[in-house]
Each structure stands twice: as C-alpha cells, then as structure tokens.
Image (cartoon, rainbow, N blue to C red; front, side, top):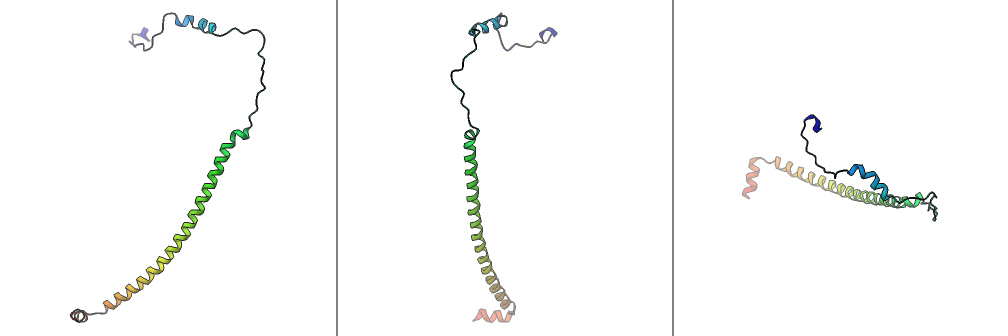
Length: 120
C-alpha cells in the first residue's frame, strides 16, 4: 500500500530473511521417520456414550425432582392461603353488615336526636 503514496506505518517487524528460511527451520525441527509404520502397542478403549452422559441424566433427574417438590409446596401454600382468604371474606362480610346497621341507625337520627344524645 505504500506504492500508491499512502503512508501506512508498519506495526510488526520481522527479521531479514525470516520467511525465506521458515520452511527449512520447521522441517529441521521435525524428526525424520523411518519407512516403517508405527505400531500401536495399546488397544484403544471404547468410551460408552451412556457413561459420558451420566452427569447430564443425573442433573436432569435432580432438576425434575426439585420442580415437583416446589410445585407441591406451592400448591399446599395456595390451599392454605385460599382457606385464610375465605375466612377473611366471612369476617369482612360480618363487619360490613355491622357497619351498615350502624350507619342506618345514624341516618335515622335528626339533629334534635343528636343534640339530645350529646347533652345526656
């Protein structure tokens, strides 16, 4: 890119002749092999897919059990809450009826009755 007059700074520096000698230096590091094929002394061990997946199976079973336990617990709590709510509704209805009766009594008072009650 410097040929077109664009002044671009080179960020990496490579020693002189590095790429010319690269392939010969790599080949020198590789040991020469004889023409004989390598003999395998140990028989490969077959790994069962079931054994490799065993932790995943165990984790999925544990997660399923946890979900069931949480669902049962939440259901019991909701039944208890439902029972409490029904009890509160009964109390509220009784309190409402009492409040309405008191309000009806006060509505029937006229100013003279109120004055008489306060002066007693």
